[in-house]
Image 1 (spheres, each protein chain N blue to C red):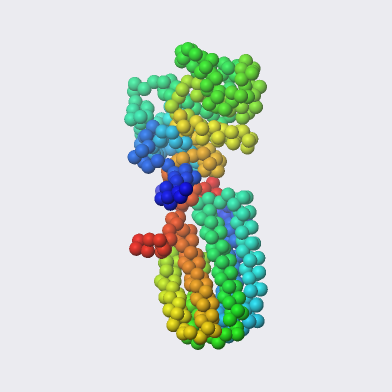
Image 2: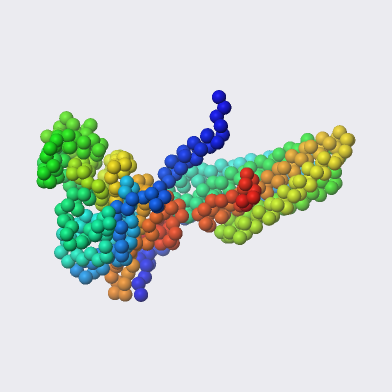
Length: 236
Length: 286
């Protein structure tokens, strides 16, 4: 019985490199926690028409941006100094993409917070507010599923994001339909128009979570593929 | 003028394919060497066993793997260099354009004319630059137009501009990187089809190494290149196909080289199929 020659070599080679990869991934997970806080804050501010909380969400974006920059620089250093290949390269590339997605999610939360401030003087429509609570909760769930699947290298979990995204998409369509039926009250219509943008932001949060799932699939399988293809929906 | 979107997208697709350095599909590749179940033993010790792969025309093919994995042993099979080692036995077959390289009527000297070799350490003869390059053609009686032949080989080896005014100077007066390019020119002067390179840049500084790598990119237009390298990034940079060799250890500790994985270099360095390849290219062992 022969044994692989790898057994001759000490375990734990490239220790520093592995530590840097681990640190990068931990940093990314922490960034996603910040985005979750931002998302929850944005939804609460919207529901409660709380402009102070909306201001906090806007200011909090600096935290996410700082983390984004930190991770970007970490990736730059790793690529320049460690020349990762194979699964290490896929991990670094996946972190690069996910980092960008998370930063954009936080930007969407800022947009929601700004719209909350703009519409603070207008009377909200209760049904729509409830719809946003639902969309926000689904967005949070999707981000959690996306980041857990990434951490666990869980392809099935990552692929489940497509079904979750469909629920947000449906809610988005319902919001648009509802806004169109709001009637002729100019204040309500103004509020409704702004809320279509909020709805779109939450829908985009779901899309970014699906993108994270696609990066997990790439990391695990080595093949990049879009879970759903907007330009060829019949093939998806 | 409006450019039809279909045209511009087609151009984009071509550019992307070029950037990815995509290889021609297998049915469009010409097989130069077809290696089947090759094994090499030195005085009864199995150095390499069970290697099967194809080497394609106008490709750069790299062999990588840890020390003792048999990659140098393997590359020496292609021009029958192992014949020169007492006790060496080669099993299996290597077909060179369909002809058994180790078949009875094959002349090893003819083989080495068509399949040249460059070694780790530059090994110019203690003669002039000109005589080094002219050596092979003179031995083989290819003396018509010798000056042109020497100049062409030096051009191909990207050395001409540096030595054209001192062709009669001693080859040993050149720098290490120049000496290695001189050895490549010496190899090219007899118009081989294949160039085997055994660690051609490992004794050179980074600038000289880059020149050799650039040279390999240019030479593959006309030649088929097989290179053994310890430097994985070099394989990633220059090779179209990469073979990863490893070592198995028998019950009594004897080490035998095996081929673990052979695929497009882009695949080997992004998504290798075998865990052992991944462990090696990511530096987790070896």
